[in-house]
Image 1 (spheres, rainbow, N blue to C red):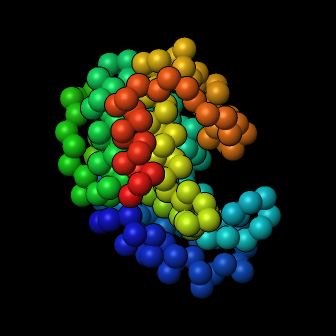
Image 2: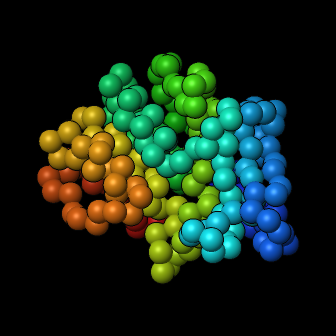
Length: 196
């Protein structure tokens, strides 16, 4: 499934119940692969403003972009950065049809070991809310979390350029400064996302 098809599916799910109490409904988008992943809706786009947002819960814990970024930062200790960045761009471009293969390694999220396929699905479903709440062209939509995931790899390979603490603030919208001296491979990947 591509991101735009999933976005429409979620939009159709949430729009009819937007005036219901927050998080009244819940669905398991991939119950056969990840039965402990739920999307709870309708959510809050910003504070108490109703929006097409949802809360993603995995293994009993709320999952946020910073959690995904932390996994990428940790993976960059054992997997070549180029492979991780290619994986991120592949999901952005191809959604669940992404087939970039990475070496076997330990992925841990919300106190649970997960596979690459499970990780890909979690990323897929968490980023969709960005297009719903911050739609292009006015905002970056799903481009922003994918760029931040690439930057998360950079925090491990080049911490002198960007630290994870600064990235955490960037993810929450706190810092809007330029990052200088980013290696060419990262720039090329970010530009693929920005220019698509």
